[in-house]
Length: 99
Image (tube, rainbow, N blue to C red; front, side, top):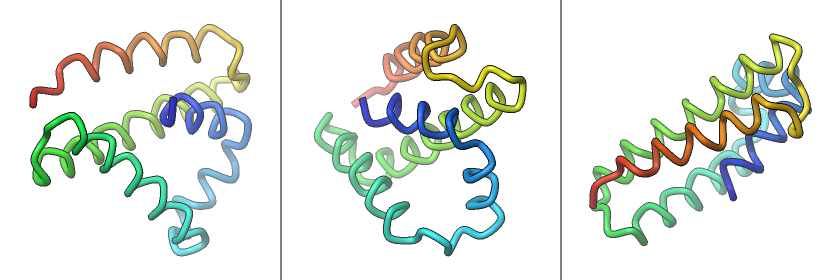
């Protein structure tokens, strides 16, 4: 739910997301909080700290890339097919995480 919600937010505000990429210190607390929450969720699956850290990077990059690409292509609504495709792809990606 965390990544789907984040994906929907990026779809609604792609310009803000790109601005944050250019100025990553603009929202450091929020970014840290989201990243730490995702790391805790991954650790709860039984991943070690190193593997959880790797998967945080993979999942965050995947989510950003999918949302920004969809938004830039003009599919900037969470209700459209790109959001559904993201959900399906995320399910596959999460399925390959080995604990």
